[in-house]
Each structure stands twice: as structure tokens, then as C-alpha cells.
Image (cartoon, rainbow, N blue to C red; front, side, top):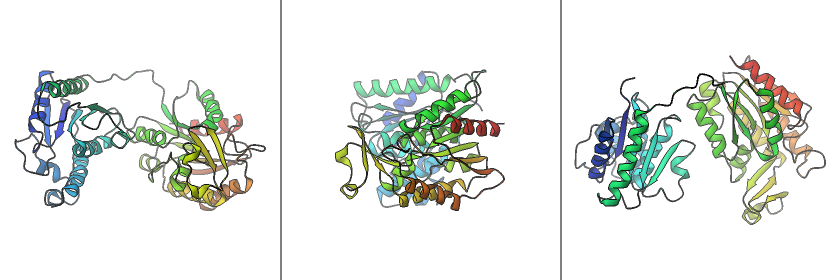
Length: 400
């Protein structure tokens, strides 16, 4: 790779002066800027990369983007085109975006597709509010523009200039690799599977470096983003409660692509069905009326748990096995027949042998074993130390 450059991205039909100023500040900081136009209208100044070139990267061609008479549709398609185009660049030192809500949605969509570790900075009018939809599971930085990105003034020059200098600094200074690093391993945890994960960490001490993710929807997505970015060696996916929220309507859902990274990358995966006995809601008052007759457990004033039913557990099982059956890499799914969470055990509020049996039976019926795909059932609770030991041994066996 040659010089790492700063890609400054925005709409030259409405933000030409601000974008040119950002490029000037990048250059003044000693980095090489590349101005990328993602306008869907007529640009008021030329860019290093014209909007037509970006649009040509759309799967349906440039006319699908620039020929659309619907502005919202054109912007959506431009975002898709920019994503494809950015992924072909091999000299990205940093990406700097400027704009309002529309351009923020457009540019951050492409930024999220880049690997974790590639510097991404968005100066935006919406950065002081709820930014989950823009940041997602990535290391994307948001800078509030304070004034609108609508002309240069004493405030906007400061804000844009600071962001440009930051992007230039990130592009010019790479992070050195640490020679003593152990293989990084992603592990999913929830409060009710903490004991299992703590045992796993002890078993793996000195052999791998564990990265623990709270299975809150974003947690699982962040772990899988690291896997897609090549920053973890394998996954110990203990906790699957995000599936329950996705299928039943809880507040911590995964996406339909959960476990897709395992098929894409073929990295070692050892997992279980931790905490699928529950759907997560916020305070008790937020539980939908349709669930008023369900078994509920108020975990704290902010979190209410709902016990999953046999039919829901069968759905969860099919969601999981359908995705694992697509995997050609080393995959082992462990079933803890003694219970899937701290509150799913004899005498505990979510102990429900019928619901657990529906989960385990459906997995047995739908999981497709193969040369590198295994199902292991143990007559243990998920938080039993012996269960964690078995998972750790299997994972270490898989590692190169």
C-alpha cells in the first residue's frame, strides 16, 4: 500500500465550500486529501472523484442513482454505491464526512462497511442526539457541527478544521502491532451466564485474549463486526438471548444476519444457547399488553424478563441451526441439558423443563452434523464449571 489518504466525502452541490475547507486543513496538517462528491444534483465545484464515478459502482449502474427522480431513492442508492466504491480502496488512511441528516445517513452507511480500525469521522448536525443508527457496531466517531453545515463561519471553521486535523493525524500515524499479543477471542455474556464466562476466562488464561461482549443486540453485532474485520481468531458464543428478542420483540435484538459472519469467515466457533429462556424488556410498564399473562421477572427497575414458551424456543432453535448449517468452518454447538441460565434451574423462577425440551429437541431435529460441524449435549447446567471446561477444550482443539 502507498500513501494513506484522507477521503473527504460530502455533497458538492450544497457543501462545496465546507468540503474544500476540510481538504485544505487536511493538506495543511500534512496528509493527502481526496475529495469525493456524492451529490445527486449538479455539483458547484469539481471533486477528485465525481458523483458519476461513485454512482457507477451501484450494482444497477450510474443511471439507477443519478437518473432517479425521487431524491430519497437517489440518496439511498448513492449510499449503496459509495459503500461498494469505498470497499475497493486500498489507500484509506481515514474517512471524513460532513453534512446534515441526509448526508450523515449516506456517508455513515458506507463507513460502517469498513473494517474496525479504519479511522472514520463524521461531522454532523445530528451528532448530539441519538446516533445508534449511524454508528451501529463500528468505531465510527461523530462530531457535532454546533452550527449547521451551511456555510463557513468562525464556529464551523473551528469544528471542521479540528475534525480535519484529527483525520489527518489518524491517517499519518498507524497503530503498531504488539508482538506479544495472544489470539483474540470474542465471548458473549449476559448476567445469567456470567458464571460460565468467568470459568471460560480462567480456563483460557494465558492461551488467548478474551474480548467479552454483553449480549444486548449491539454487543453481539460488535463482536461479529470484529470477526468480519479479521480482528478476532474465533468466537465462544455462549449467550444467544439476542435471538429471543429478535423473534419475540424484545429490546435487545440481534439482526437477521446473526451468525452470518461464521459462515463468511469460517473462523472457529464454539457456542451454546445461553439465556434463550428470556425476552428482555425495559421497565415493567413497557411490557406489551399482549404479554400481560406471561411469566415475568423484574430484574431491576429498568429491565424486565419474560420467560420464553416452548413454541418460541422451537423458533429460536430453528433460527440458530439454519445459520449454523450454512457454515463450512469448524463449528461446535453445546447444549446444557441442565438449564440455559442462572434462573433456569430447579427452584428458580424460569425453570421450565417443557420449554427447554422444545429447544433441545428442535435443535436435534434440525442441526446438520458434518465433518467440521458438531453437536455436543452435556447433562450439565450452563454455569457448571465442567460445562465451561468442555467448551474451552473444544475451542482450543480448533485453534491452529
